[in-house]
Image (cartoon, rainbow, N blue to C red; front, side, top):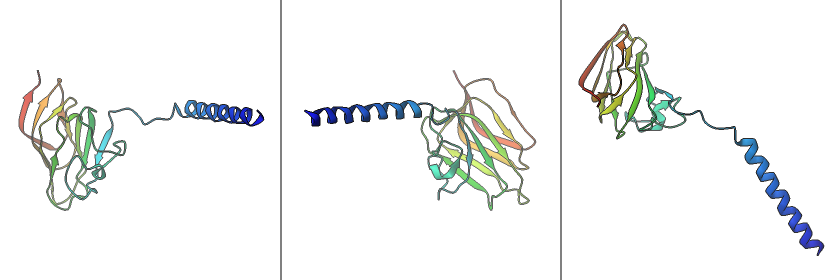
Length: 157
């Protein structure tokens, strides 16, 4: 009888403690998307889907429907660099090219088509380009002191 009561008490304590833990950790969560994802290129390839190529992206690569803001800094480029958007259905908030380099190395974003809702800013000192098809999903602004080349631009429905 005592053993049965002790077992029931232990079970109640475990359940109560686990409930307290879940309440205590309920407020601890990752920030919600969209994220500001900064290209690091440290993932060993030039693919958008490689988490190691990004920082600030919730420990992941941009996700298709997150509408993340993408940042590409040209300061540490050692050559012209072509990046591949290999994510199907990618929706991007904004794209920012920034930094300077004396050799005028550039980023080219190629690969799968993607949607853009927040415009492109190029504050770098070079002519960065996007050769992937870009669909504008909202009215937006393109600007900055650098140059931007868009090969295929579509207006969303």
